[in-house]
Every structure is written in structure tokens, then in C-alpha cells.
Amino acid sequence: MNQRLQRLADQIQRTLAILIRDEINDPRLTGFVTISSVKVSPDLGYADVYVTILEPSQDGGMNSEAHAQSLKVLNTAAGFLRTELARTMKTRTTPRLRFHYDEVTAHGNRMMSLVGQAMQKTQESEKNYLDEEHQLDDDKS
Image (tube, rainbow, N blue to C red):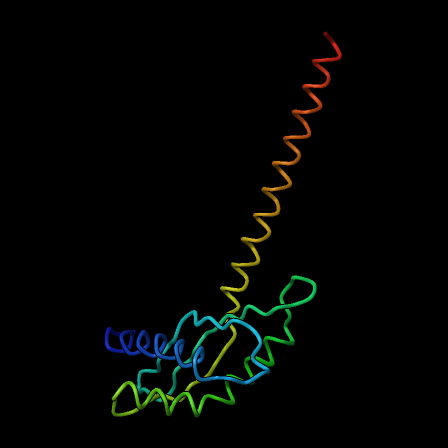
């Protein structure tokens, strides 16, 4: 991506983050939406917006149904968001917005969670081992 397209993508990302936070008041959009990246086509016709959505769920995990519903809300509001982008950006053309769920970031977050759990279990195991070893030393004395 050339520098001009990258600058435009960065501007779209910043502006969309504010618009989604302040202007989208749909009750079906229950999660916290984070824009991971924006990729603008070379002809400025489309902008693919990659988002992650932190959804509140009862089991503490990620809810794919809620993600799909949130993406549907964002794609439905794409026309409104494009209009608002055109007002603030002052460019000749404003790309059509297509929202996608960012699987890479979600997968990375999941992996970080698993690593954290493994580290916690390792620390607990080491603590238990040291406690048992200390107890054996006390029994020998």
C-alpha cells in the first residue's frame, strides 16, 4: 500500500472509531468495538475495516453469535458512517465501508489468554512442589 493510501486508511480508522463510539446507538451493538486496521483499495472504491468486538457473555468466553450480530449492525450502518466520513474528511471520494471480524487479533488474544493460564498453572505446580519438598525436609529432621 502506498503512502497516500496508508494515510487515508489511518484517517478513516481514527474517524470511524470516534463515529462508532459516539454516533451508533443501536442496542444490538452491545460490545466494545475496536478497529484493528483499515485497508483501502487502490481505486478508493472500498475500505475493508477489520474490527474486534469484546462482547459481554455469561460464560466469560467469546460469543460468535453476538459478534455476527454486531457485524450486521456495523454493515447496516455503513452508509451512515460513510456519509459522516465524507463530511469530516473532505476528500473527493469516500470509499464504501465493509466491516470484517478480525480473526487474527481474536486468535492472538485467545493465545495470550491460554499462555497466561499455563503460566499460572506452572507457578501453582512449582509452589506445590516446593511446599512438598519443604515438608519432606521437615519430616527428616
